[in-house]
Structure formats: structure tokens, C-alpha cells
Length: 232
Ligand code: CDP
Image 1 (spheres, rainbow, N blue to C red):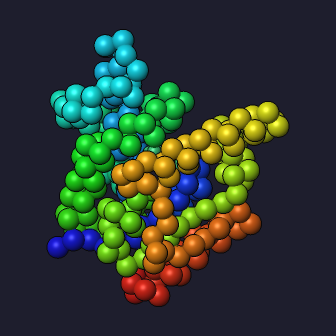
Image 2: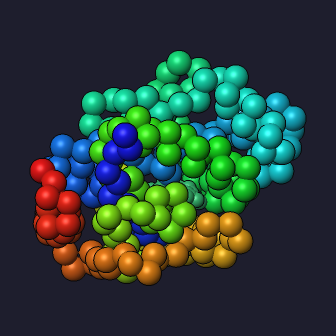
């Protein structure tokens, strides 16, 4: 029996992952971060690029995916959700490094990579767990029948400011401008790709978190889930 899916999509740094994790916790669901799998595949592509002395975005996707399988890339249950493992160790730190963020849109635009990731996400849900899944195409492509879909946005400045505060230092104007531009470039790449672009599902509920506290945005989604799914 398949589990129930709550889909949370939206642009880069809109707070999807932390929100999805808190919603999952409130409902007793597991959190499934599809971006972590794309990031882990990108880490593998970077390794292959280094071995060949080529740009990671130019590595053939079949080579990358074969290497991912040889190195045992998987999402492993970690209590609240799933953590990406490579070579038998968690790679939560390495997949958030700037080099991965730089190449992840190019690697995840490759159709073979998307099919590989989608097959893994669907098989985790087929195993029967209820999950809150966050990403770019969860409500449109991966789980189009999800009974609750949320499209989470925030202004570019709010998103850049939040991303910088995660780094634990005071925000300066230049860094804010650089981060805003980097997020805009990634959103543009994710929205313009021909396969599974970042797009709001027609039946998604919009939540703009620019002026909401974290508790408010989580509370809205949990309330919607309780209404629709009689969950938690
Ligand atoms: O956390 P952040 O918003 O930086 O991004 P993420 O969720 O970790 O996703 C990283 C990248 O993976 C995105 O910029 C997309 O290129 C890709 N991605 C995707 O194509 N489809 C998904 N369902 C999730 C992520």
C-alpha cells in the first residue's frame, strides 16, 4: 500500500525543507527532501568530473548514475526523515557545499538523472510511509495525485537573507546582493529547463512566507493537512 504524500514545491531557499520537516513532525509523517538526492547525484558528478578533468555538467549522466549506484548512493531513514548516504557514510554536509549548489541545476536538468531520482522517491512512498516531500516538481510530476500540494514562496530578498543567516554571520549588503543574484540564476535555470521545470501545480495552495513567522507557515500547512486528510 502506498503512503500519503504532502507535496511542498517552490523556488530556492523558500524554506521548503525546514517547513516540510516541521510539518512532517507535527503529523507523524517522514520528511523526504528530493533536493538532497539531486545534490548527492551532483556530488558524484563532481567526483567523476575531477577524475576526467572535465566540467561536472559535461559528464555523461549514465556514467554519473552508474558511479552513484557503485558507490551505494541512497536515502536512508534517519528517524525524522531520510539522509543521503554515499560510500556508506552520510553526506549531509558535503551536499550543501557551494560547488554542489553551483552545478546542481545543470545536473538535475538531465532527463536520465530525473528518472533515476523519481524512481527512488516513488519506491520510498510505495513502501507505505506517509511523507512530506519537498522539491520543484513534486506536485506536478512526481506525485501529481498528492491530496495536498503547497507552493511556498518568499520575496527574493527574504530568501537570500534567510540563506545567509543559516551561515551564522551578520548580513552585509554586498553578500545579500550576491546571494539574491545566485538564487535568481538558479530559479531561472530550474524554471526554464524543458523537463519538469519549477512550476506551481494548478491545484496547489500558495503560501507566501515573506511576512509569516516560521511557526505561522508550518501551522497553516498542518491545518490544511488536518482538514483534508484527517491526519495527525
Ligand atoms: O534548498 P534549496 O532551495 O537550495 O534547493 P534544494 O531543494 O536542495 O534543490 C537543489 C536543486 O536541485 C534545485 O535548484 C534544482 O535544480 C534541483 N531539484 C530539482 O530539480 N527537482 C526537485 N524536485 C528538487 C530539487
